[in-house]
Image (tube, rainbow, N blue to C red; front, side, top):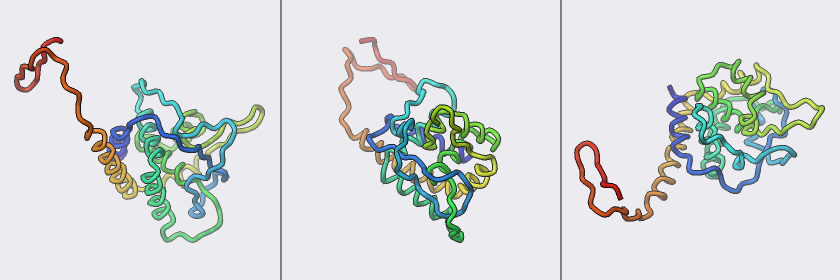
Length: 215
């Protein structure tokens, strides 16, 4: 399925835990609309970890960390991130009338859409993840609520109406751009000269494996 294909490309393009970009967080209420979308408004808040500084459980064998790592990699690539968000904006707002209402940020739609497809989750599970999973909420730009106050919640219908805007054709185009950006990074890393093999003798090759004597 396309969720698996996109998840593979995301995970394959992860080269680190992030760069040195400023954290961003949405400042709009979470209500459905088809216009006035914001990519991801810069407004630092207390208790919010910048996306590029979120620590992921890299040793986990669960399916979610590689998905989040891929999204984090997109976030730390300014050109790619701008292209993806511009593509989302063009597709989501195409043929829609401007109403002045606000909906989920484009980045939030991308995160939740990729998580839903990557985990093959229904909207009931997505609602639980969006409201109770700490890492996902950090990626959504939701700060920790001060003690004694209610934190921001994503309603079931809000998620269903917004995330459904990320259709299969849009995902395929995003996937192609992510894969292209990953190939550029891969070429840069493989262009470095390799270190000589530290071995006392030449390897003995036997089809289909290659056996090296102990050093």
